[in-house]
Image (cartoon, rainbow, N blue to C red; front, side, top):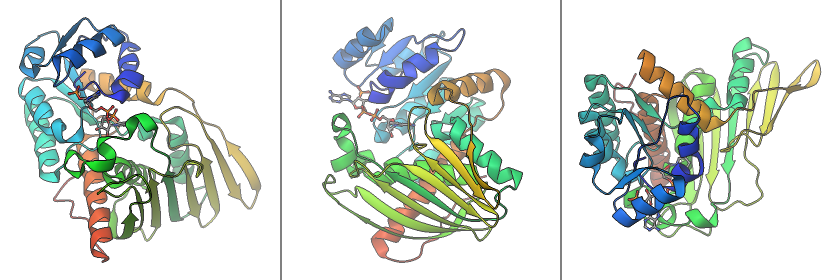
Length: 330
Ligand code: NDP
């Protein structure tokens, strides 16, 4: 565990341990005492503030990186150089060139590199995609992504006041929306307009954003993210020429929510699997390490979600239409 983060403690340690044969062997922090406290709290045998020491352990097959965003790059590059497989948190870095370097380095080293875009592993998101792909809603005309939530009190730190560390709702949540749109529709946007603001929590960084994206198929995407909306309820709507999907409560860390399909036949509840999202991320990652297959969210998916979020930011800052430059990312 590289990073004594909230998500590592709340979800990922247990998710890794749930895999047969997997063991969490080290806790790494930039502070030796924080590493020790985290290891004690999580029942992890060893802790360190020295990444080289952890990476020198031959028992370490893979690292999970969930430090603050501006540390991901150096930590991932060191892990890749040591031949370790990497599951890295989103956003992969604070700089797109660095994210591309990480993914290319992993390719060259022949190690698995995955991005923790866990929404792809939700039964709900997979069910929405299945309905779209089945043709039941016809041609997709528009996708509305509602990801306006209230940032929990214990997370109101660097996200709200430190743009250099990767703060701001666009770096934090627009990347998830970008990956969700790409996962559901199987395509990328070609142009984006946006606005953002500080609506109560942000201090020098945006805490709310709305953007509209045109996709290559002609579909439009509306993406709303915020840290300041306690009662908005997160969800997804997909509107097609033959039907509409209404998914409530599906932008979450735990499996839940509901999906309703509206067509000429009437209203139908869509059932879906309620497995653990992060458990599925780790199951998929572990399988890909074993087989060499591509993980559900690859490094390039992480690069593309960063590029789309960066384009949203530029569109909001300039008040102009912006086109993402995917720089040859597959
Ligand atoms: P936190 O803010 O909880 O922790 C981030 C870092 O802050 C830790 O790695 C730690 O550094 C440092 N830190 C923790 N406690 C203290 C303290 N008391 N004093 C000083 N520093 C401290 O991170 P999050 O869990 O919110 O996010 C971590 C990463 O995971 C981010 O990249 C985020 O974008 C991502 N994330 C992804 C989610 C997903 O669903 N995919 C969900 C939530 C977050 P050190 O490691 O050096 O000890």
